Image 1: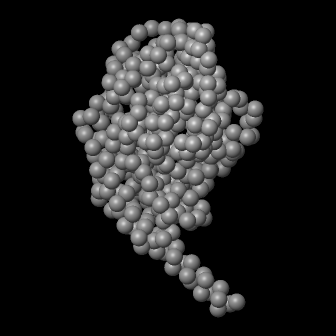
Image 2: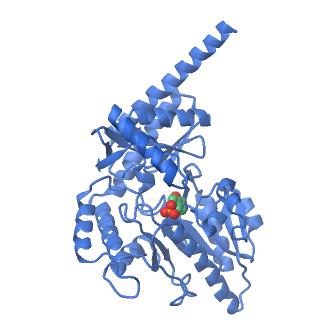
Image 3: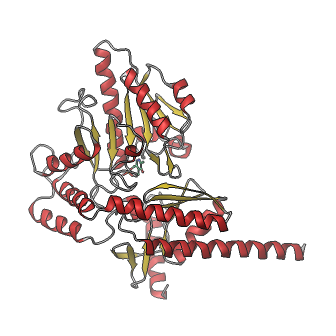
Length: 422
Ligand SMILES: *Cc1c(COP(=O)(O)O)cnc(C)c1O
């Protein structure tokens, strides 16, 4: 890094430390633009991005379809509010309904906001069933290791204590089920439950796929009682796993699903997609948003979905993702520090033996100009743009190989040094 960039970064970092609420620990890089699967810093250095803004930039950077949609729509209309019609919502909703297999859409702005709406829909739906004489309560069953966002309902249904405890009391009425444990689900399920809440593949929880057996058991139990099955597809959805939605690998159709991250190519947009039955309790005025589903966000989302379709990115994600996992498994044979390789399509993880090593690997990958992150302490997470190629995978795996070899060598040197001195 040049002296000039170094001092610019120090200046920025000092200003942020003084001016921002300290919620983030940023990496010391200053990106200026992006191109395909690369981010480019101030000095023109290119970084291979295997994180895509946490699963957002599915088409990579500076995709002409996104640029065109933004330019054309921003010249016409950016915002109208939900008091008036514009063409975008129905056009986008049609695409989402077709691909989810569900009936109706509500547009929000972010993941957590879509999730909050889904929780409200579930409570309202159970209320309606009660008014019709059905015995159904207000309790939610969520999963251990789940992550659903940062607002109050979302943190209440998020398992990790550090996200919840400082803000207590959060929304009451949530019980956690051991992940993929059908017995535990059956034991905790009752007519008190208004919804079962799952991610098709847990993201922040460490890229852990829900089992088909568990998903089908949850589907069966909820169908029998009238409770809703709500699947969070905010990270896994929209092509990343090689299908449009993660639940499509599990042989189930949920009542409600939530999507967000990649939906509008980096412009904030979230959505709840649900059945007619799940929406039956909702009437005008009960739920809403000022910004959600605005003309700009919808135009970009339409371009994103049509581009994924046109460029065959689902099949591509399945193929390159499968190759990525194969290469990581081959690496695992030579590096026992890799405990497990998991994933689906281009939602991939390599779990390491220790948190310290995982942290070290992320740092050294950054030094080699490859961006990844670590989730659940020990899990290296890869959420690259869906336009990633096998050549990029090779580059990343070679870097990982080098770094893990270095770590082993350093460990050995330290042990040898320790023995000599001791
Ligand atoms: C990121 C994420 C959320 C929260 O989305 P935000 O847009 O950050 O509010 C919710 N659920 C899952 C599975 C996520 O990955």
